Length: 226
Image (cartoon, rainbow, N blue to C red):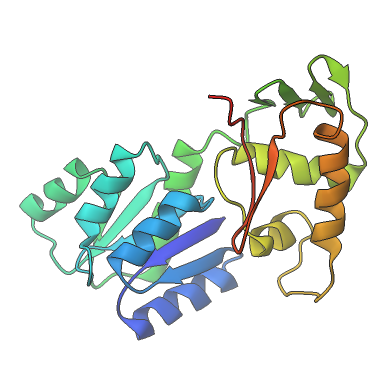
């Protein structure tokens, strides 16, 4: 999973990132509520771990703001405030689970993985559609406006990941980890080459571009026709 940790205590954040990494997941970090809100709103995350007491913008405001913008990423709230009323406030703000501090990492991991399994349909969804572009995972077939578009296996994986997160910005790091299984930057233009090839196949002969480069951030697949 790709997880965003919104936590203002550097030591706690570093511990969570390291522990999540050792458990086979990838974790980004935001040190305040405003930064966390922006990253959670614009990024493609499988789950969020949000501290309740944050600078710039408190955790409950971050969560409620995301829900108002229809961001449905599952949220696990961490807080030193563990009374029943505090937990109820967190859940009513849009949190999916609430874990009081101190906590055992094993429990945190079990809870975040359970949330992702329960709320993310990606493992069972077999067809993705963006505008007139369609990808069928079972048939391994891509069509646009009814026209079959042959893709190489890596191109298919790249398009599948982009379409799973349609409308969201997908960073180069996400693509390296999820499509190429790299957990380091190979310092090559491998992503640029494959994005260019994919764009040439799904956009070149059509009136409306669907694959967009978001300068300084990454890529997004979306239909801007409304």
